Length: 128
Image (cartoon, rainbow, N blue to C red; front, side, top):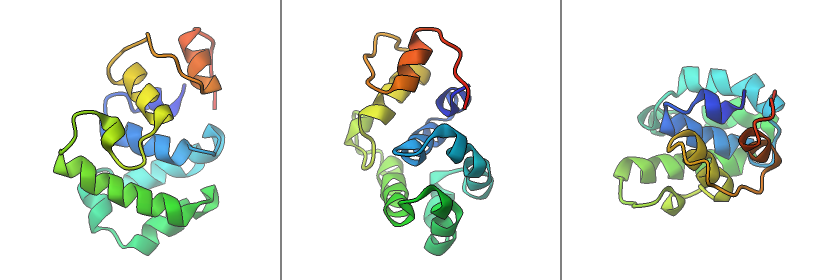
């Protein structure tokens, strides 16, 4: 099961999972994402957190400085609600948008370029 499928009922977690999955495989992200969401399950809690604690929690995934800043800016914009399309949110590119369309909106007409999303749409069993 893809992480996006697991978080399909929590838009915030699905989008943060996509930020963590960028340039990192799902197997590695799974080692840290559950602790991340145990500590910071909401955008409000992320924004209230000590920035170093978030950075340290995701350090093993690499790009921890950039990802931490991306997550925090994303959380601010997400909470502000001043967007009509999630692609307007900082850090949300094609991969996150495609994941959101497939798993949150149940739009299977998406044409992703990501190999795991393509496998999912073809009905192939995907494990991470």
